[in-house]
Length: 135
Image (cartoon, rainbow, N blue to C red; front, side, top):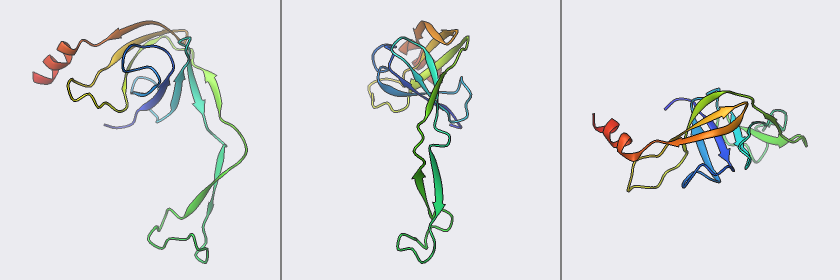
C-alpha cells in the first residue's frame, strides 16, 4: 500500500481508464493530485490556501466530545485551486483507483511522458499479470 498520487484522466488511455480516478507511485508519491487533459498534457492540481480550519469550542452544539482531536470545521477562503503543467520525461505506471472487474486481474498501463505530454501508452497484458501472481 503506502502513499500514492491520484490522477484524474480525461485522455483516452483505453477501456477502463478514461474519466476515471487513477493512482500511481511513479510521480512524487506524496498524495498529490494530477490531471491529464484530453490533449494528453499532465498538470499538477494545487489546493493550497483554498480552505482554513477553525476549532470548534466546547460550548458549541457542534462539538463532539468523542472526537478529541477532530473538532474543527473546514472554512473556504474564497480562493480557487491552481493547476500548473508538469514537464516530465519518464514512464509512469497508472492503474484504476477502484476496480470492480472480478472477472480479471487489476489492470495497469505504462504511459511515456515527453515534456509532460503523453507520447506512448502500453497496457500490461493480462497473461503477464496472471503469471506474475502465480509465480
